[in-house]
Image (cartoon, rainbow, N blue to C red; front, side):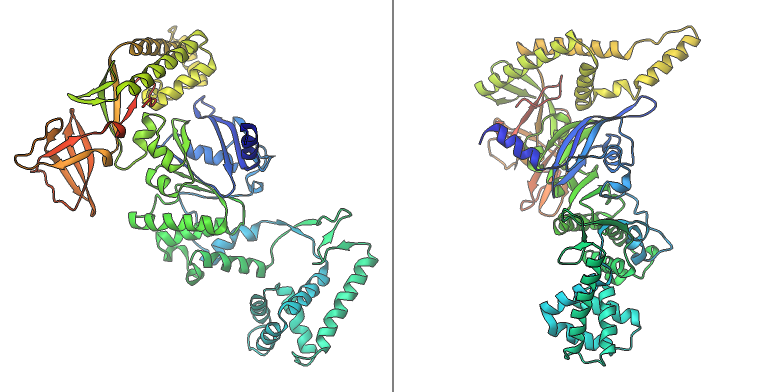
Length: 577
């Protein structure tokens, strides 16, 4: 299959398309930079990053709660930029549950259905309901007759009898009412043919009336136009339709026993499920959640995490989930979007993000405990010197290293030659990865102009223009990359805690080639320890099997395998090995 065909198939499968979205606030601060993402149906996308990285702003732009500065949002090919939030076929669950305290659980879940009108096919009056009855009798006449007799003879109110009968037979409340009345008119003969004949007469009369009006209907008696397409009307749901959907939603979330309770009578997890129910009942194709579990305790978060994933699979919706908790991202996502200071740092599956991080930010942010990162020395023959421990990468590492720095130097030279807006954005993305973007604070374009104006009032000038400062940083990094290409230099070496090789030292055993240290903290987690120890002047964490007992009084031998390490460039933050 050609690349063109593969690309075409991928585009056809796109459900929600986010193209080059940006958000700039009135003070000039840019919260989101060039965010692009294609989302397929039934994907569970998790946007993860530290506080202030722009993930919630991104979610609000998709939902229509925040204006878009530039870029486009498409849902199944339809542009959503200028559509109000209520028309975007989306439901959102916020960090605060936002339940109405004076309403019980039933009314809280039902609330979206009571205030909105929904587009629905136009029904042919009573003909629609008589047709519904006729079809149901053809499917299972015995079950309908039994339910009809039992409900007609019950002592419940007329409305309660009709609703119970409708639920038992899977028909509308209006159809149930018509059949109960006809049953009483015929003297309660549920097995007689007289009332069945009357149903057929009602259907035929309805068809004649329809023909006289010159209208057309399909086999289920929905009105259609000359092309055979359903005529659509915007109407509110009936009380029975609302009740039916509330109970269906409550069953999915195990909330049926709590429908008559007020929010103050519920636990945190139950309130969270009510908030989810209010979103689910809207029956929309896209669900968005903004840190919905952050207010729950640790055990409940674990339970609700799995419940949300189960619910996602059960209803078959597309979910966009925002969190700062990388554990939630790893355990819930189909794909993860890692953000930092408004930039996308990497998009991939949990496995790809964990095992193949694009840069130092992603490597340290994803994983618990976090990746251990050291300053090491790269030597020209492909050897990494880490505090006297030599890790040999060989010819393969040397070739990868030389190719990486050659390309990086060319990239920065091109930025320096034409330091325009695109080059500034590229630099800011690099600095957001290395952590150096804090140098510029949150001074935006408009804010900078305001500062200039303020300084001019006092006949002073700002000490340094931001753009000039950025260009100087590019020039400095360009020089560093050129030096690193042909000489020994500093690199950042990363290794996951579970990949650090630890052996408890025994008397008389030779540990040459390994570093022998003393643990500073031994955290028992049940099946394993998190062992902390000082190495190369910093605290390091490693996993150790709890089958062996270990304490701070023991000595441990530490070593790394070349295939378990990650190497990052300290200038750009990118991983090259």
